[in-house]
Length: 113
Image 1 (cartoon, helix red, strand yellow):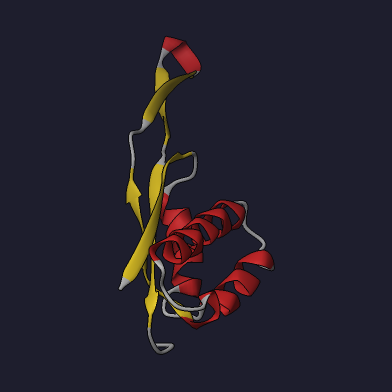
Image 2: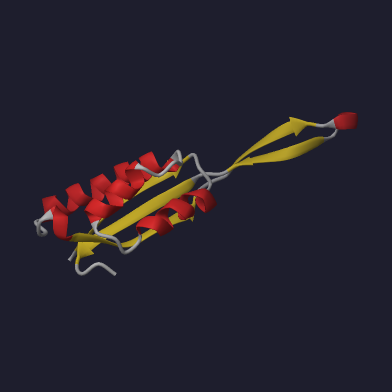
């Protein structure tokens, strides 16, 4: 049995979010929370909130003790991109892409991978 939590439209690029998500994939929930607490990235706080939400969803579903839960899957998909313009020399302009991402974390009962 598994439970998941999704955070959508996070103002961070999926590439940067995947760096942090790779650190917690397959870990015990308690170890993953410790890792996120001491990770020096801005997205780690958002991922920690999503992980806590997934644990709460698991408790709501009646899964076992939160200490036994494992992060079975976590990924960051690309969300919509906001397009902005930056003025450049000689009247031209360059495109600025402000990327967003959808972060999904799935926790389940099981052994630490």
